[in-house]
Image 1 (tube, one colour):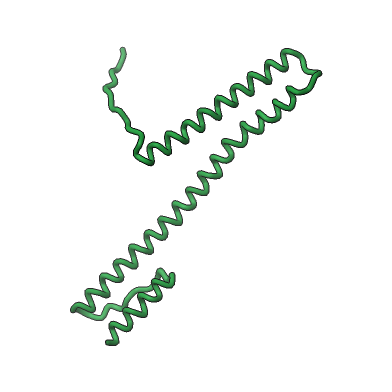
Image 2 (cartoon, helix red, strand yellow):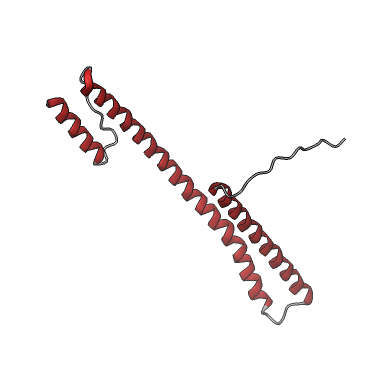
Length: 137
């Protein structure tokens, strides 16, 4: 019963969050096979946990980049909209500000469209079509 108790204690450590917990290898037989299988499973869990941490880091970086890409043009649009409310602007300045606002809006629309495409690709809803491309000479 001692090997079973050791395996149970090790499984409780793993279940409690100790991803370094490994069963002592106690020779052959079914208990030895169970210990080996347990250690394989524990290693796979630890590897997945590391991968999840890396994915979480990448997600945070992605969200930070997306936030920046959304905020920067919106700040420009807001500033120019406030400037357009002034009465002492020339028609040329108003036209220039309006053009810049339109450009920044188009940039935002393209960016959001790219995010939606990424979402469709990840969900499998976006299908790529393969077509032959010929080289023009």
